[in-house]
Length: 82
Image (cartoon, rainbow, N blue to C red; front, side, top):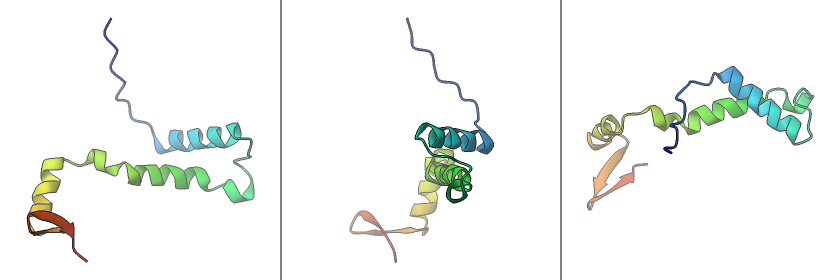
């Protein structure tokens, strides 16, 4: 029997924040306490940033990079310019 493909449904930022709250509760902490109130939003934004590359077309990115963007060619290897 073939394995079903995962759903491509979009998860909202609010749903991601609720998931973080659930994990905080699961760990035994209180997501509504002073030091954690903003944590679900921070975590959701961090994950959006960390996984933002999945939204980028690799060929368009490589054209930018090769065309004088953030990387430069040096001896056949690309390296970050400072």
